Image (cartoon, rainbow, N blue to C red; front, top):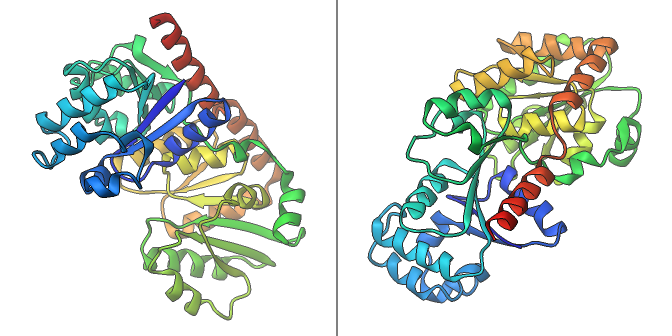
Length: 355
């Protein structure tokens, strides 16, 4: 099977996880980033993706329409996909859902699906015409059906996470791999998307509150502008370790006693699949707030309302083993590690029935 995975910008994490599993299952995966496509010249196309190397008609349309929602572009994209050997397309963000819904109206033939997180569910419009929507959790159906999406097109499989998060080493093995002392309390703070002041305050509060030997790993994106400032500020603090976003995130999660993060959908499901006690740092964003409330209601996380509360909840989870174990049990019940497999099985089943 040949699958096209589409996004507006860089492929989101859930899309990348689905692509990883599809390739392992023997499918051919093509990716299409709309923003990058719009900036391509004919010459640079050959260095981008096999999918657009020979798309002369599509690239020609770019010189007439610089907005992927323009009819000229939609028509060219639809004709090109129909003429290719793509069996199914998967949209990984709201913008690509809009593009492919218009493409469906223009006559797109391959099956087309979307991965939908909490925030996106509340923003879906009734004009979305895709064949199916793979949603993060059952409660999202409420937002989708209110916007005219029939329940027969909604699949509650969870969000795909990379396979690495399912291949557990256990806490002891993870700490051995990362050379982390077995006898320390270890906190992992996912700080992506937060300001320097927010990250600094979490670190300072942990230093003030924690009265025992501990390690706080602060994980930041590789291109973060605050890494250097944070490293300088806590240069002499052996308990604070600033690290870069890494492919070993699953091992850091396994080695940690507690993960602290904003209630972002993908990071939350990664922690839950990894089976790591979780504290959500509260935010005012509607979608993030719903995620924190859902996780807390299912006992898959504790939600914090302030910096001080974040540290208090994290320390509580690190010390109360019974509470942490109950949370892990709930995570294994609600966070589906096999989401990518179930999504791909569904796509394959629909393709066979259509054929």
